[in-house]
Length: 310
Ligand code: SF4
Image (tube, rainbow, N blue to C red):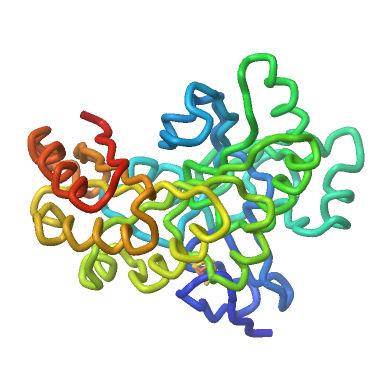
């Protein structure tokens, strides 16, 4: 039976067996399932500053995990191998793709000796399955190495918000922090269900025009709503990647930083340097001077502005 996915602005209408734009959700037997649930493609104990978060537990480290899929189509994506992957069936051992996005599903996925950490290649990307319990146990075991919690990052984590939610609730019970690094395009009603257990966000604000967001397959309005809502409940830092000729004018940075200041002058902005990659591999990197100059523009409106990748 045809279903409409409620998770983001794409509102994908999916026939049975069809995968959504993000490749992380699929209509399976008339229900939209999160097919990247627990499917870990990347994991690292990173400095918190790498998320980037500069005013949230500075000097700490955080266990960072990612899966596959994204609901944007940025031609400059630095993680395109995982963000653009997905959508197919498992091709190797590991049996079915985990779709246990509720307690029963988790229990069943975790049951049996072989359920844990099963490897599978999903549409060309290597994944290992972990239950929330296993991931949180790993995070706890790393506390002695400075780990403060879990960061959901690398691909767009919120297309699989169920895994974020299940892990975050458990992590919170164990006294860990939860950080989400996102393009900020989750339906705000669903965001509301996550906010009680998320301590900090880094949200990409990729530009400040409808045109730019249209080019990258996003929704400017939805990202704005997300940032406003998240900043009411959690620590929020924002990252803007400056791409020459795309979003590097004084007027755009002035409007962007002025808008953020309207939420709070204390909101943190990271002005970041673009390096050529993916479909923009033929572009030159952003001149360092441009990044510093636009950071100065932003400082007219905001107290905390940092440069990145310089
Ligand atoms: S989360 Fe994925 S499947 Fe759902 S509406 Fe967005 S792009 Fe489509």
